[in-house]
Image (cartoon, rainbow, N blue to C red; front, side, top):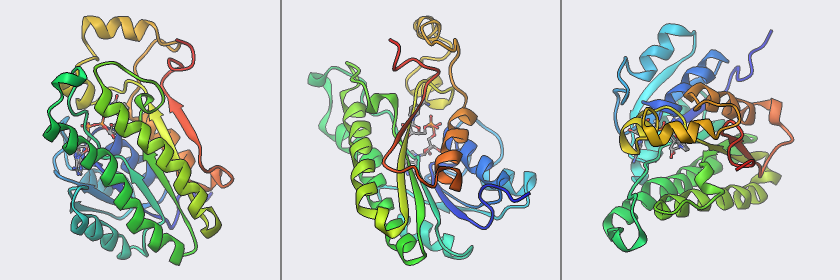
Length: 258
Ligand SMILES: NC(=O)c1ccc[n+]([C@@H]2O[C@H](COP(=O)([O-])OP(=O)(O)OC[C@H]3O[C@@H](n4cnc5c(N)ncnc54)[C@H](O)[C@@H]3O)[C@@H](O)[C@H]2O)c1
């Protein structure tokens, strides 16, 4: 039986760690060649580099490209790496940071701008580069990793919400623009997922406050990176061939029930 991404090539930003790593592994398991585009090769949570794990556990091709999504040349290098496998068919804009977590009066301009460079500019310019190549190659699929913070406002997280909300509307606008060229553009909105972001950068998982959050989730647990990878796989694959300009929330039911 053919796999969902047989013959496809995917560029996954931020795929060294966490959610991006799970996406890369899931995609490779479905037959995709994967370009791991990240600042770092070593996963934040430990273990072997993603491209090595992918090669070990599947027959898929995988390569690592040192890529800062705020750097246009690095993004071009990631797209060029995909040419080795036939050209980019799928782009997953996953790289992201939490940035400043403070009342607006305490947000440092430099920290704010860096957050926007990574979480918003990186998504915009990676999509710009991929869109041109996909359109010339008969189509493709872009999935942007936003957040539930791109749907609801969270006090103390205004910079992150600004960026992730912007990604949501960018997704819809780009879908309108690229649909006629056969390029679908969708967003996923994860809730709390257990990664270094939620254990270290913005500690929720394993904390007392986090326990109250977890109990309020209808499905009574935090998400795992694989939960998001499964949703992204659906949107990236032909299973979603009539789905574009859509937001898929992956949060155990929290956002629409609170
Ligand atoms: N973990 C969650 O609860 C959660 C919830 C909602 C949305 N998200 C989003 O999911 C995405 C992945 O988050 P995660 O939890 O896996 O985080 P993570 O910190 O575990 O992994 C993020 C990866 O992105 C890379 N990265 C960071 N800045 C980069 C840059 N400038 N260029 C290239 N790579 C860069 C890091 O090196 C790291 O490998 C992010 O966009 C995040 O905002 C996460």
